[in-house]
Image (cartoon, rainbow over all chains, first blue to last red; front, side, top):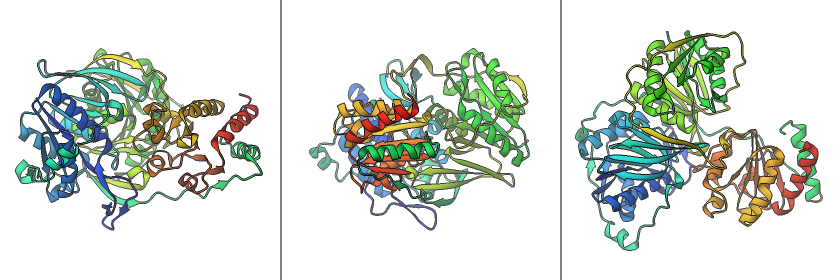
Length: 258
Length: 324
């Protein structure tokens, strides 16, 4: 079977700056695979090891992304594919899903798409559902455990972990699945594999290759600002811990916080 | 009519608090857009719930009532919502930003080729156009969005962003039929999470971090303090990764984002990823023995001290003063 993992490169921490053109400036900040996507890669490797076939990591980004794609290959992905075009730089989530859907259709033989529940920079969690709907495939989001992937019956059964309930759901393949953090423990790539994939260049497909010229976003960012500073706080002092605790509780009661 | 449609979220068979918040804000936005406020209740046997929803300001509450709509499936609920969208032609569709609603809202927006904003904390309607505000990058960036004209907007809104609507005169209730909907997923069980904590709903959260020293100290000190305050208890990523506390308690960029009335951070240094998940809390109390810990920079009240000494005293004091 052919599993595709959609992965994104993100800044390790979010202490980013805002460029005058409202784009995000993460220069000088280490880039990593989006944390939740690492769990998707690991889950892809697990089911690829069980059923064979291909495990492709797919990313929409720039050449900067290649390093993270190599890391995914060193973890155990078998193939990689980069969607790169200046036209992709400013797409909103649904427009981006249309581009990725075009790539999936071009690949042609995909049984299962895995991705993280959201990226740690944009944080919307909208990509997986949008991709599923554009493709016309069923979706299982917030999956905390894949119980079975059955290429024979073409089904997947998984647990969706919501805030207070766990749903067990079966869907026909092909399907789109987004995973949460407690699904597995991503493996570290071995040094040997890191060396082996160090020079791999993923195939690159452009907007023209995909036939997706003219896709437009429905959402435009008109302002980006840092959050307003919190009003400066008050340090509680006192001769000892008991005095400080009394004073703290006084403050919480006086301000009707408790 | 360029109005607003609110998707009524259900929690344990009742209307979710976030829905009452959205009905309140939706009324204001519908007036600004010059159209009606509608709501839609989707599920099986939801007539009584629609009657309850009708007193919170919607001109019309639509029901799409069908056995195929319980339990929730994306296919079923998106198809039902689209029936209501066809009936009301809204400019703006509002729902909460829970996991299930993100599953639903993003799928609906993709189907409608709509503008989508997830986790909005503010919405405006001016001159017939909607704008939305949402944080990203762990709360370090506040984005304002505009949307393409002529396409609807789906906005999924963070809880506690707006005050709840107050009950008043009841709007009308009108039934819509689901019609043909292909539901491809089969839900075989829906089980409550054992020991589940709905941190995103809690008004008070007490969180522990590595400063507690070990797992035993966490359980000896944090749950009793949370209980004394009538709140839920959370954990930093460091101690979840260390295996002290299950992941569902984790607050932060890779855990839950919370905005309670009171957040008490105990032995939490305040790594940027943690701050990302809790900095929008209305009041923050930080207790840490390191006076330079970054958590103090966001604290409403800071107390420098050893958590192992301070927390038992604080629990005792709260119990006495709050008569718990």
